Structure formats: C-alpha cells, structure tokens
Length: 433
Ligand SMILES: O=C(O)[C@H]1O[C@H](OP(=O)(O)OP(=O)(O)OC[C@H]2O[C@@H](n3ccc(=O)[nH]c3=O)[C@H](O)[C@@H]2O)[C@H](O)[C@@H](O)[C@@H]1O
Image (cartoon, rainbow, N blue to C red; front, side, top):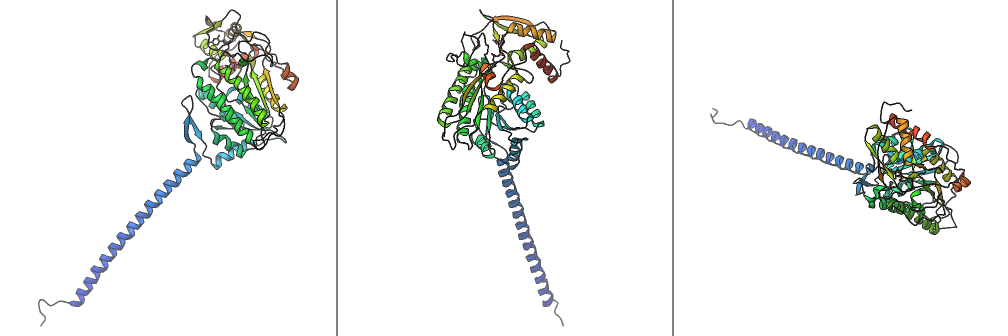
C-alpha cells in the first residue's frame, strides 16, 4: 500500500530540474540584458565622444578676444572648409593671379575681391567681421561675394594658425592686405584696436608671408592721413610724413616703416597705397558722407566741421581706387626671398591714390541736399582736435606713370551712385534728383 506520504521521486527530480533550469535561464537572461545595456551605453558614449571630436575639428575653438569683444578663433580644420578655400583660390584664366584679400568683407576689400574674380583671378578672403560698424553690412557684402564664388574665411589676421593654414593650402602669388582698424576719430576711443590690427596684424601677416614658399608680393592699404599736418599741397609721396595728427595715422605710418624692414631683411615685394577718403556704394557707415546721408534722411542735425582754412577732402570714388589697387597688383614684381631668406633686392613702393581735386565738406553737404532733396540741419562747429586734418589733396603722377592710374569720377556723380545704392539697400522709397 502506498503511503500517504510517499514521494514520487521521479516527479520531484523533474520538478527540481525545471526549477533549476528556470533559475539558470533567468540569471542568464539577466546577464545578457546587462551585457546588452553595457554595450549600448559604451556605443552611446563612444558616439558622443567621436561627435565631439569631429565638431571640435570642424568648428573653430575660441582662444582669445579682440578689441571689440569678439572672439578670435584658432583654426580647427575640416575637409569641407579646405575644399572651399581651394575652390575659391583657383584662377579662371591662364596665368591668373592667386590673391589673398584681407579685410575682404570691408568696403574696399569687397570691391577689389569682386573685380579680381571678375577678370579671372583666384580670390580667397579673410575678415574678422568685427563690430566697429554694423557687421550685417559686412555679411551682406560677403553674401554678394559668395554669389561670385568668393569664399571669405571668418577669422583674424592675428590668428597665426589660421593664416599659416591658408598659406599651407594655397600658393598665393599676391596678398592684397586691406584688413585694418580704420577711422580717424575712433582712435581716441579705442587706441589699442589700431595697434592690434594695423601693427600686430600686419606684422603677423608679414611674418607668415616672408616664410612662405614662394613668398607672395604684397599690396597694402596705407592712408592719406600719413601726411598729417603738412601744409604743402598737393601731397606727394616724398613729402614728409613724420607729423601724424591721429593714432590711426601713426599706425599707418608705422606700417610703412615695417614694410621697409620686411623688404630689406626678407626680400618681400611691398607696395603701400595711400588712399584718400574713399567713398561709394557699399561704403563705410562711420564716414561722414555715409552718416550725413542717413541723418539727413532721418531729419537729424549734422555736425559740419569748420576751421580757419576751409575743411576739404580729396574724396576718391571706389571704382577709381579699385583700378589703382589692380594696377598696383599687376605691376608688383615678385618677392625675391625664399624660406625666410632674402635672395636679392625686392621692390618697395608707395603711391597716392586720390582724386586730385579736393572738395569742401560744405560742398559735400550741398551735393547731398540736392540729390536727396532735403535741407540739412547743419551745426557748424569748430573742428575738434580729434585726429582730423583740415585738408587733403593728392598728387597721383607717380601712380599714373607706373600703372596708368587716372581717376575719372567727380564727387557729384560718385555721390549720386552712392545715394542710389543707399536708398535701395535700406529699402527707402525716395527719388533722387
Ligand atoms: O583717406 C584717408 O586717409 C582716411 O579717410 C577717411 O578719413 P576722413 O578723410 O577723415 O573721412 P571722414 O571721417 O568721412 O571725414 C570727411 C570730412 O568730414 C569732416 N567731418 C567728419 C565728421 C563730422 O561729424 N563732421 C565733419 O565735418 C571731417 O573733418 C573730414 O573733413 C577714413 O575714415 C580713413 O579710414 C582713411 O584712412
């Protein structure tokens, strides 16, 4: 008789085995789940790290800041970026020049960049888009240039890594160096920005250019302001330039001396162009003709400086200046050095690029009044001692002799083109006379 308490050993063993298998299965599943989770997290972290690494190299990493509180960037690289640089610098004609334009989103830089590209040269720009005046105007110029396949690198000429990288990628035949802290009066507000761009920046560029192989020829923007307080007119290149009236003028004069040094030691071909109050479409909002137009349209008063002698400028239209810049580039001889060593004497030149016919500021206002059909609210005030000089007048016979420079636009027709552009750019409904 089977005991009530008898045990079915077979069943029991089976039961135990099932329980055991079940337990083993659960813990295996748990381990597998853990391993899966571990792998997922590891993959996620790796993806994140790789992403950060790539971003770090594609984007620029900020390291410094300039005088306008804007970040400067140390170059990070990136294949897409290098492709753009290469593409933009390829000339479209045989024996076309390969030009690095500094300050390419600036007034003169954008006009020159477009003119070079139009005739088939390769152009790469660099600009730090600082906020000295409305950067949106600089961005609009950049957009225009990008439509003409000109790439502007967003960076500072003080960024050694970035400029070196550009010279690594491209064999520049020329540098058109227009990046600068411009404006005469602002030098009293922010003196160091002038030293930063016009002295440090220029030296940085020359240091890199002198070590480049081949060394490029350099054409760069000096200024009529180097004539300072001279009273002998018209100003000729061999007149004295040792009495600057502003720190701006002093840094431009320093640039001319620095150019001499790099020419002398390293055989760099250097041409300085003394611009005389350049104006025109896409101009600089910090200049009198530009903000007079703006203020007159808005019905605001303008300050017109007066002095014992009539305050006047040799206002020079942008298209004439562009012709001068291209002429200087075309007649620039090759630098003679290589690997940072001079191999022979190199070209060193300075030219006036003016209009040869000064016009008083009062007359400038009268022309604007006529074009805009607005009576200006003029406040005649004695010219403050803020760096301004009373009078400029260029003798351009040297530039005419060497590259046929001959200005052809007078102030009235030049301002007409400017006002037309101004009204259309700012979407102002008005008719010019
Ligand atoms: O060619 C040059 O060397 C220089 O030309 C201009 O400097 P500037 O000639 O002083 O030009 P504006 O600032 O536009 O002044 C033009 C005239 O308007 C006068 N002005 C300026 C401002 C103002 O409120 N009222 C006024 O009567 C100035 O005294 C000057 O005679 C540029 O701003 C400089 O960057 C450039 O280097």
